[in-house]
Length: 140
Ligand SMILES: [Zn+2]
Image (cartoon, rainbow, N blue to C red; front, side, top):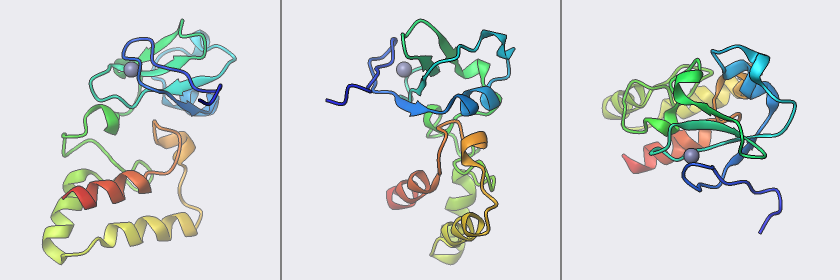
């Protein structure tokens, strides 16, 4: 077991390390409450905690975040799955039905190629959405 692992104090879900800059850019509340330490992202859809501190003492909830969080509402077609290029599950579903293939993936890849993505500041999970998009398309 990785000694870096931390578990959500509410659900026990293994947290994903996120950069402090991600937490700061995502919060809609005063940053005066942010500690100068490591934060983790809780991806459990049944949990209202989005970020928790390393010591588990500080929790930021879905209501403290500027964005709707894809992992917290995976069945909501209007919550973005790609935060840099603003694709929702509904966009992807419609495009798949219309064209039978996922041009959205190609568009996201082109955006990444051109340096237009900013996943660490725009995506609550703090990194690229492509894994989520691919998983979603596979699931359809
Ligand atoms: Zn949690």
